[in-house]
Image: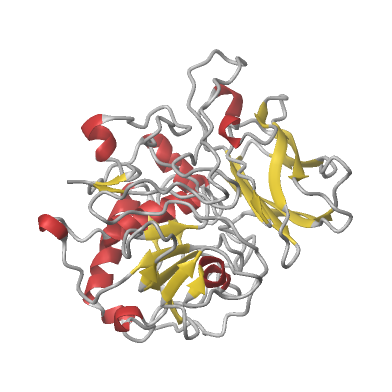
Length: 433
């Protein structure tokens, strides 16, 4: 029996399983089809009923992005030095600095040019330390005046512009909708503050990615270890289950045209083996274990790349049994170009030295890694249990083909990508030539 991959969203009274906007078949320039909006749940998501007890939390991007210090240093463990810095690989960084908001909660119009030789960009908005404000990229216009994002209903957006506490990210373009056609020229957008005050401030950067030459691209990987199952930076290179999981992860991403660089290893400070809350409670740690946002802030100071945190417990909701959540991504997309935020990585459950498959199933570690990293790079589920579909027209939405896709919401051992999923993965600026 397939295990349900549970996608969670917190903080904004938005139920899980609604990561991407609706797909709609429309004429060029036609109106977007309305999407069903999930009901409120007191700020906590309805995680769904996990099938066979294990799932994947999909996206988790609530909390505060104030960066913490990373006490652990990266060990080279026989691999190359730390990866490229911010803006490397031809990526242009357009820094708008700190923006403020008017009484309506809107920033000034932010405009930047893209060239015909570019293929996409990512917007990253980071609030001031400790910010509890909610930010969203809005009024995103192409040079032709096509509206990709406007207003607070992010289900309607042709580019995901997910409102969240303290930070927000938007990847362009992850849709093949005609309105989201890539056009060189001047792009414009604004940032919205949902709770504007005179003190509301946010740092805004845009990372523009040039179109690379044909051939595989590469992704740096930073592995953080909490000591779960005896896994540390020293023992990780020879740990059998981790090695097998990384090989499976590498195979899946190689099929998408992405080569994983040799991993970099680091140990987390003491106490991070158990993640027992989504966000810091009352500005501090939960009574037992650590919060998810505190975990991901440990990426501060790490080299540019995908941050993977291996923990022993992801007990995030009282209604879910221990082990129900196999992994959590920082967002769709997450903060792939900025470390030290609560959306700067992926948390992975590594709860036993040798995982015992259920009912003869293969070890899901490699699939969980590939699935969660794909979320972090901007790819949603092919469908949700409520009928919500992703933004890509070539992804299967039902039957065996959907279950065979890596981004199926069911952990059914999928290994397939659609062509547009591959394009979206490779478009993220953290993926380098």
